[in-house]
Image (cartoon, rainbow over all chains, first blue to last red; front, top):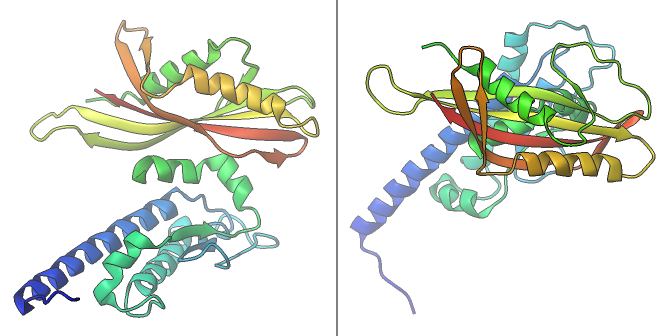
Length: 140
Length: 140
């Protein structure tokens, strides 16, 4: 048994999916901006260890050991934001292993996505700066 | 309109200091020498948002943020010590309750508790810690 959808309705559904998709992407990028903004910068290892992924394994992992301190915060945050925006585009867009852009709005609601920080000292930085607590407070 | 962060902080810190049997409090930017084997709590005031509550001229502002209380107890003695402190903090800052504070200018502020939740414990040798995040908001 099947249901025939008129081309007009189909076009409307596609338009809705596209709108919802761009809203979700915008919200995720907004979240990425806050994550980067709230991440402290010394060597840049912590802020550059953020990833956006559809599974909790792997991701960027930078160690601060032996790195020069007092790096330019704006520059390091910019690099990190660039990485996260690319991750989000890949996860939600045509490059996603989960399918085409056409259906990504549905996939986002069904799948789990993660902002991860795998820096060796991530737990310590978060203990001292409460980055995740602030992100949860802002974005729920 | 001047911000009221100082008063929000004072309201939350005064409330915490009044909790029965709370150990020593380490405040932000105040020197605190921790003593091995002696429990203490470390507080951080993390404002997140300040947004107009309504449209129009001179709108009331809504302030959001996190009051973070990290409960430290001696390492190697089990989680009970830090858990007990965390429970006291959670009870004192229960969600949907209010914290009232009157400053030196006789202005009274009522800070609303949005949520209070704890995270899993961790080690910061020679202590074991449990963070408690208290989400707050106030209109002013």
